[in-house]
Amino acid sequence: MKIVVCIKQVPDTAGGVKFKPDGTLDRGAMLAIMNPDDKAGLEAALRIKDADPENVKVTAVTMGLPKAMAVLREAVAMGADEGLLITDRVLGGADTWATSSTIAGALKNMEYDLIITGRQAIDGDTAQVGPQIAEHLGLPTISYAKEIEIDGDSVIVKRMFDDGYMMLKAKMPCLITALSELNDPRYMTPGGVFDAFDKADKFVTWGRAELSVDDSNIGLKGSPTQIAKASDKVAKGKGTVVKPDSPQEAADCIAAALLEKNII
Image (cartoon, rainbow, N blue to C red; front, side, top):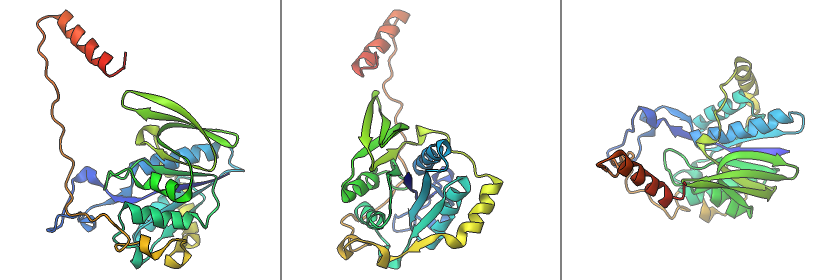
């Protein structure tokens, strides 16, 4: 079984977001990490491999600048078998459409049974790239995965919503987008770190020539969306404040709200 996990190197927003004078993210001034949702997707793939290590191969794929090789080394240090970096100057400035077209163009030249991506990246929060990759490849998609189980040639996924969940089963090949709540990703091991650096010279780097994609769908020229300005997440309000006159009134108010959301 071949699993491809799409990961992204993103700015670490936990330490605060920094912007350039033009309103775009100043990525050079921020630490870079593996996107949390992608990391959960990688952990899910590694757990599938743990259950059948002789027959499961995990490949991590990322698109970005050459420095994005760091997240591939991290993925291999966690347990992935190999890494693929998609990088080329003509791919710069890509929006979600151009990014998904580019990654799909690489996947068309690879073998896979299952593709796992994160639900969304913390630097964009669009949740578009994973489903778009599946659309380019003509694959079924299961998004918002909270649990993943392999059942023969099919995958069973618990798909989460704000007020419940659904269980879905799809035949492979298919694509799954993972929530960060899917699991607690493992740490890199010392042995894994050494393995990652030993394999670093064997990581594959693909440029424009290795991609099965039309020039009109890559890079800045192939991006119909242009970012005018980026901003930090807006803090949520405190919500609805209710001041009941009695404990019974408070309980009734809470019960009514839960009923409205179909929780009870």
